[in-house]
Image (cartoon, rainbow, N blue to C red; front, side, top):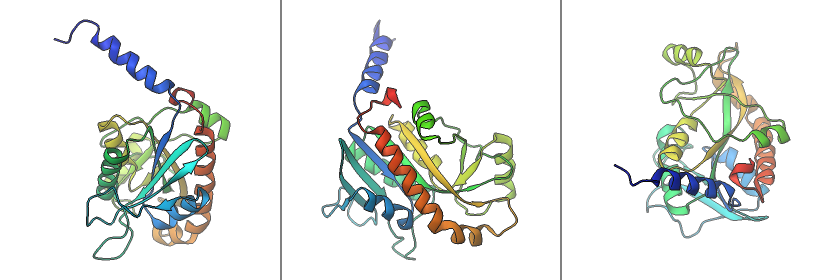
Length: 238
């Protein structure tokens, strides 16, 4: 049995943490194309003395913006195929390692995603992200449910789960980041820019590539606005 009052003390610790100014954020991005505009926007420098285990392709950029220490990580290129290491496995591993090494106050998972004409969610492992009502209102951003799967296209099984769980966009990393953030008790928010309509008429891959450059620019702008809003605030003020 827990000592008397332990629950109250834990609640007070959480409240105190939420009232401290945010000083360190971790931005997790899956693709180099998505990451570099953000790196350039905040003039981040690549880590020449990696904090990650030797041999992994993970890349870290870091720097100071206003009163925030920003770390941006992406899983790098697959060592065999030379393509971006997208998907849930890479995202979960690099998020876990980055939290352990960098101890951020807040995680931002930013990236592109597919939207749906019908609403969806990848119904296994439902998790709640950190609530940011003030941020949403101030920046006029839309809130929605995010589904995650390891395929760019949508299988019939995915679609059935998606429709049943009422999500609005699909990516390949978000749920993995959410799982690790929840496991290690680090608040996380998600910024997604829609590249394609997964259940639309055009082939998903074709539409994704056509829209990637424009959507990446919009994502870069959204991330910059969110970071500007976060600067100088506590978690409770988001």
